Image (cartoon, rainbow, N blue to C red; front, top):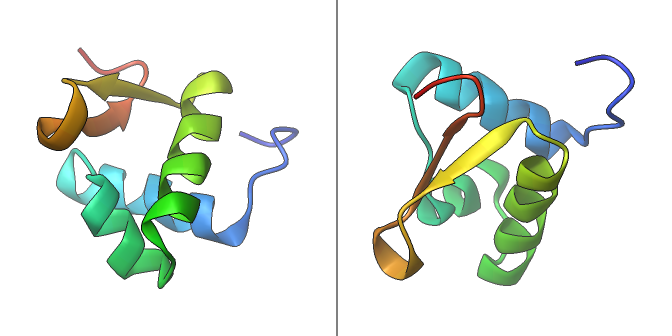
Length: 69
């Protein structure tokens, strides 16, 4: 994942998914100690970069590593 210019918060999110298999926006907010808006933005960036894949929509959604089905 070198060369993706990830923030420390985003790296923590990747580690969380590797341990737990998924992450929600609320999980990310607690992990990164950030607001809902910042969490949404950070997670969206990880989706655009191809690191995460979003599963579901709206409140029931969560994120997994993009290579994982």
